[in-house]
Length: 420
Image (tube, rainbow, N blue to C red):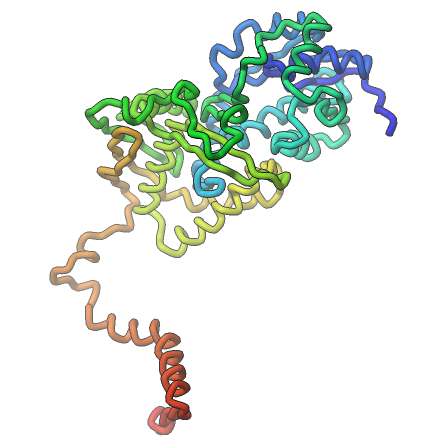
């Protein structure tokens, strides 16, 4: 297959080993101008010196945009409201970030009159799908370049050698054993010793959270306030979404909150082992779940759990801009209207214990639930309810009993139910 004619390409750039060597590789193999784009979504010190590094690698420019506020309000909070958790554990810190990065890649490509976009995701992982589905959804006319599906580089050692040959400044060495992704929501760790699922993660691998064993011996109580399902205040202080998450990250990390070690099913069909640190996110999910328990009726809450499962798959699979995900979001927004109030949680050595919750929209009524005398509920009514609710079980038991005795089941006398 012949290569497309590329004049200018916008590369999703992190400054790490892979994307650093992609810059000269694109110029060498496509004879095109390379613009690097980096989304600041909470990587911290990883962004230092990024522009200079990109230019030294051969890029014509490097565009860095602070997207932390948009990431928190338009991506993390909607996902939080859904209650989505992939395979019961993963809070999808990497998954939810990719559509935002790819969205801005497309916007910059359009602003810069580029006719292609590129990413550094491998051909084995989920990220290639997440990036490219977003490209297709937002601008299908752009050419997509995925170097890992084209080049001969197959290892970090190969990439380091290529960087040295092309005078690309990289700090990575063959001693770097973990593949990490860090943003406002989480830190992920993969590769190296973690590729053996029987090997315990070493304590010095974790970047944010202390070991629960070394966390403070005194519990700490935090209060999170919500308005229509969105966190708005922490311990009585109103905070912007990104600031609230940052503050909760610091508190949760101190208490060893949010560590997950799991083997997950990748979209491409293979299993992978990942270790995640999501301290603030774990607290927010716990708080949001508690407030929903007060404010949502049983049927809505139970159906929303089913929606959350599908929603989690769609986020993990890179289908953020899919019509179904957007439609599910409308349903979720409707369910969140009454979810206003506050939740108090006690944090202690890796655990989260709810200690209080309140809402003006609470469906909990002490006078309904009490075992004492009340006017709204006659306990005698329960007999008829149980008879009807248990009728299928009763009929099956009667049939099974008659069959065991090799007898026909006696038919009921329908005449007594006839009207006069």
